[in-house]
Amino acid sequence: MQMTKKQSATLLEQLNRIISEGRNPHTMDIDVLPTIEILEKINQEDAGVADAVRKTIPHIAKAVDAIVPSLQAGGRLIYMGAGTSGRLGILDAVECRPTFSVPESMVIGIIAGGDQAIKNAVEGAEDNTVMGVEDLKALNFNANDVLVGLSASGRTPYVIKAMEYANSLNAATITVTCNPESPMMHVAAIGICAVVGAECITGSTRMKSGTAQKLILNMLSTASMIRLGKTYENLMVDVNATNQKLKARATRIVMQATDCTEEVADAALQAANNRAKLAILMILTGQDAAQAEAQLSDNGGFLRRAVQSHS
Image (spheres, rainbow, N blue to C red):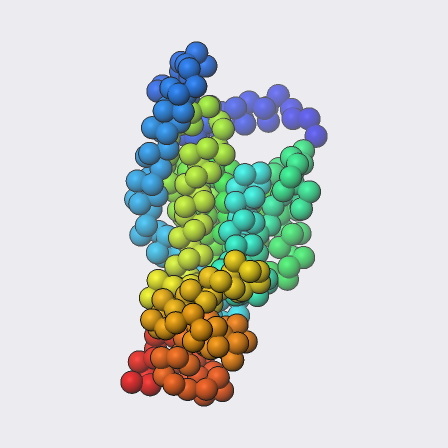
């Protein structure tokens, strides 16, 4: 749908106020530089992203502390965005499944325009406020769920309307953006804003802004899974061994956690139906699979607690 002159002027005014849409004074000559210097410029800009994310850690912690009880109560973590932001949400959601053996329904990524938008841009999708709400309704989104709205600019209409709908259900709402004065920061109950500044290429928010969002998503999901007992020490003991590499990794995890031999690890994994967490507990406590399963259950699936309770 074509914008009116007034709508166009309003949008231009909004973009002028968005930090990530500004021109970067450090890269004004990037189009005339040799390859090595182009790459050095990009790397120099990327170097500040981690520090920008570090400054948001108190807000990320609040988000994790909202996500964990929701997941414990049977709720879901829903990422929602358009373009790069939507794709990053889907990436994080998909990676949670094999890494932590969670159901596909626990962490879900939604992108404006549907699955076709993962590979191809869908015209007008991010401006479709109706679909933002409809996509949540299609998932039977409810008050037990958590919605994380993703947008570098913080002004994506598709996401904003969906967050307002989530608020109306009293669900937890979180936003991840790179623009501190954005509408989404005012809509969300918890706002996470990594101010990475102007991009190397003006408006190309797949660069620093996308990197910042990816780092924050890593922290949200990983910290939440740790809090749910999906790790032992720093080992991902709930890994879902669905291929040869992951089966080898499960064997290695059991060996690292127990200092046992490969043969002992493989035997325990076979008895534990390839569940590394259960195999580790069996080896550390001398229990059989049924006994170890009961002890894990008594300790809410937390391996460290189960080991300590046996001591």
